[in-house]
Length: 105
Image (cartoon, rainbow, N blue to C red; front, side, top):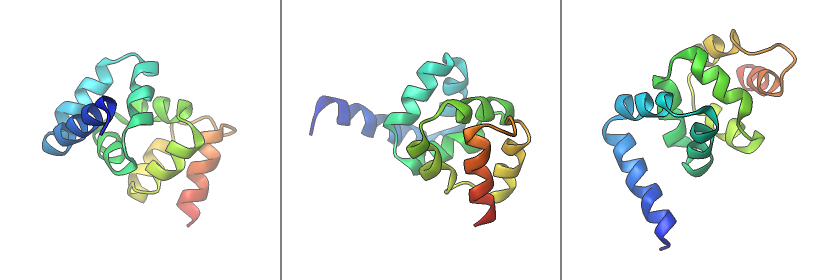
């Protein structure tokens, strides 16, 4: 196992143990740094964090996530929260379209 994978495992265990604190830490990062974290985590762990973020901040991050991370992560989030996040996305944005597709399924 590579050194990088060891860090990811440690981070994911921390998030499992205290998702609220992990979310607070994510909110304190610059957006591009937070996106990098989401790009490395597995979708279930990313979904845990998103569930605990402020909705406006979650929407802002979702706008910048890659399509792959976005679709895998958002498919694990409850429809009610997805709808709340949707309210803060620009109607023509890529993230808005993906979220609408997930809400339809």
